[in-house]
Length: 509
Image (cartoon, rainbow, N blue to C red; front, side):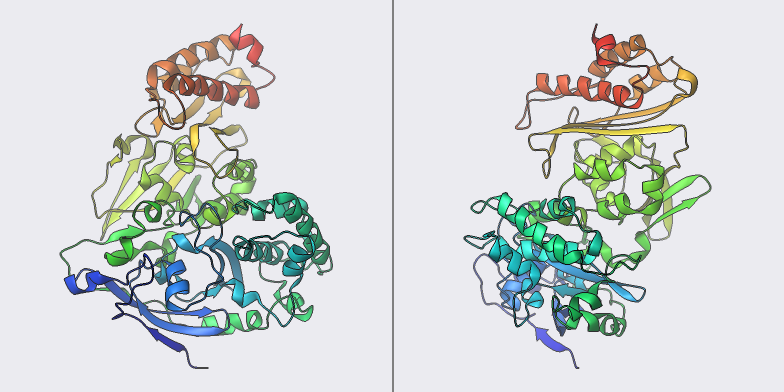
């Protein structure tokens, strides 16, 4: 089947707040041919690379099932499935289309709620209807997509916790969540009928198609994707304006979502060499484009840091974790970036490249001031490296926010410590939300190194922490409150990791 051509480059028609790239006339935008699967159709289009997938679907393709809600990634109404060819099968993950640039669709399978429709209701759709889990219906398409994505991911191993995981990125203001949980229980019963095969995401597609729960176009996707050539570099009409680098887009599209489609953009996720996790010579190497979800779910990370999935559940939602990249979190330089704070405590080193030039910077020296980095404008963070944890290494992450899930931290903290025989041999400690930058606690770390692990040592360390931090009052809490949180979170590290030596009562007595 020949691809469907969708050329809108010269369009000037307005659709609400969306205006197709007027910057073309100034010679600033970039355009690129993009070839991908949209549900059961192959699409070939030319678009500005920074155009949002949500806007492409609603205003270009007139697929209205994908709803525009908050347009910040919080509500989940615009959730779609994005399938990527991995070996012989396609790996599907739910993402919020309001934070994804259209250029990133090249060579992928984009599935909207329309692409899940059959002649009858699927089991996911039927469960939502039968349990009264929809009223106004605005959030329902995204929920159907996420639950279907979890069914593809988990198969017969799907549990009630997996349903909660899938719903973590969705807001429903009218129906309530109990009916959604009941619908999830029905879906789990369907999942139990699948035959386990010992494999991962995507391998239940044939079974679900035979059961009449997925459209047949899912079966055809791998072969069609194999025929799509690699993406071409975007063509910019002017070299005067340097491009904006976009990775996961989870912050920059929130801040500048209306203007980015009209500006020159380089979509970093088109560079697969900047993804992946490897171990070499006692070091863990993380591609800067590795997503939060890929990091927490990687077998090597799960083995070395078993608590990482639990830490990650405190961070954003499933859809956002499927988009947010480790490198993007670091470069964004938020003083409360969760993975920034975590990696800062891993004694990480950053690899920066510009053309053929390559250099490394210790992460603790990377933040010079608020949103000020030790990097040149056109340098790209390509890799994060940290020492492999040993059996003696203990790691912890703590976070306090107004909501437990899908919320920005008031204060967060991480620690990496080696203390054989009760003496602190090595320690790295970070705090977020208490300074203009993600804070590495240099003075506290210097004091703790070589000290015995006793309540008195921790008391003195907590006093040093108060001297190092400089919180301000803002919407996430007063300066006094943040000082209290900093004390409590640092204390929590030692109480959790060394309960046989440190207790709250002994430290505060």
